[in-house]
Length: 150
Image (cartoon, rainbow, N blue to C red):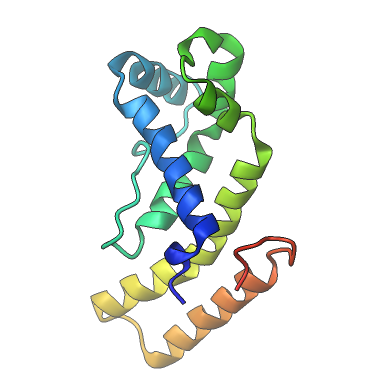
């Protein structure tokens, strides 16, 4: 099953794209975001957009959002006027968005690690089996109430 084809995940990816686009289309907002990262000493390579042809990109997208969340919170508190889009303002106040972010990241992490190891030639089939067990554990830990749980 391609998780990115599930309606809830598609909608989640679209919300991620809107959030990332909100910051990347404005040099002023992006500068404020970078300032927050620097002030908080958060190491980040920036917000990463999901690319359907790259296996690890959904992990990278969710991870980048979660890493930068403290800066989003700081911006909401100290610079609320910079949020001119009410949808983005509401999204950053929506804890369920960040919970979904964590859940998607937890599922995608073992997939990303396994595929990267296979592509580099450093993994055996036994290693892949272990990564699949880690994936099963990540899926198991997602509450049954989540609609995209396989």
